[in-house]
Length: 313
Ligand SMILES: C[S@@+](CC[C@H](N)C(=O)[O-])C[C@H]1O[C@@H](n2cnc3c(N)ncnc32)[C@H](O)[C@@H]1O
Image (tube, rainbow, N blue to C red; front, top):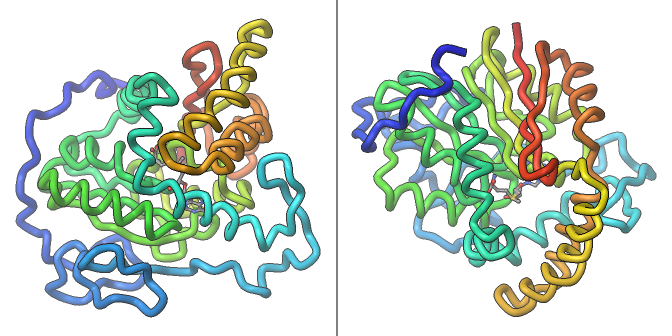
């Protein structure tokens, strides 16, 4: 792709259209509400900040068709309808310490992985980008700068605690071209068909109960010609390295979690969920099944992480 090595632009510029209705949402934001950041507080919202975030299709109700079906939550087998709640508890618990834990656990390497994914995105000025399960906004912050004032970024996540941290961080950084939307990756219900040039999901897909449904939803909201990037833990390619990595993840991570976030269970879940996630080839096949074309992947750090890429042609 000719634009993949484009240099980041140096600053965030003001978006002159920041008070317009978001072009991506099936349900428009109220007129004159900048970025949807000042919606009235929704019933049941965790009021950890002064402003609220539009939320959509969050609970998986009894009508999911999953009654009696089971899935995995780390190494536990749980009812499919319970997994989202358990994942939510993990991220509510770790939200305030999420960024520092990422740096500690990965020795800062997650920043290089994310930079690699951003370089593969081919993002250009004026584009419309959706960062799914975007949490505290590492990717959205860079995309905000890259797309410039004529472009637009949506940072979306199912978890209000994570999204609140992301929103505060991006507002503090002066990102005026970003919307913040609570949404389930399995449906992406707030977003209209064919509305984004670029979709990213970074360390999020692993946590989603129905990954095939999520991939189909991603295909739906992507514009023809657009691309999807999935940055996720994957299967290390070198067996001896894999043993060392197991030792690190199952001993050091829960201890760090206990010391820094006072939560060892969430970091035990992290280690287990990584082992339960589809390997590189399986995930590529799942993307193809959802309709993505020209799919490929790149292993990073010996396959500890992989970036998968697919296109909607
Ligand atoms: C490990 S964090 C990744 C955050 C960010 N993308 C990053 O790379 O730092 C995983 C995120 O996935 C979100 N998540 C989990 N299940 C989700 C779902 N079904 N739909 C949308 N987001 C989800 C969590 O709330 C959490 O913020």
